[in-house]
Image (tube, rainbow, N blue to C red; front, side):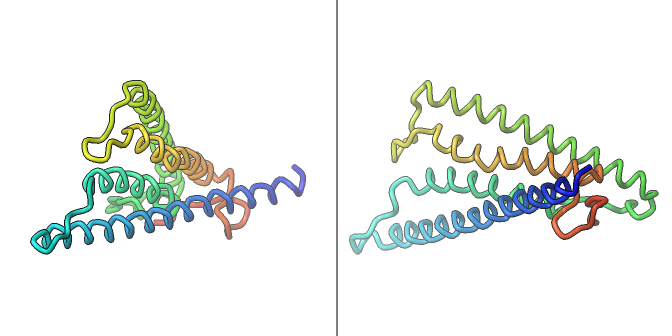
Length: 184
């Protein structure tokens, strides 16, 4: 194996982690924008007697924006081992069993992400073909699906990367060659 292979692996690892982190930060911005918009809408509702009004379609924007934010957070969460775990007996398992279970969980997560992206793709195409619109703003519903598919597709890549880390075929950024063992 050439010396450029480990360097390429480090670059890929950094790129995967950077993309996941950037999408998580984007999710924060989306949620902050939704919170500000919701506050403006609530204040508008409260001050209707004074000539203000709520933001039109606020619930539609919250619905689409929240889905986008959640899909943006999940890849970073998975890379950082942030999902809820029940590890009551984890430390009692032999190290080899821990690695095998982590690898199996990462493969399962990869399958789930692939299934989600596949079904979101089908839904996007169906909503686009039907021309279905939101009730108030008349936005095409497929836009929300299409936007959320971008971070969901990153989720597939991240799940694949985590599975490779669990199998010790690649290392997380900052780890030596030998791979990313589970961080419990």
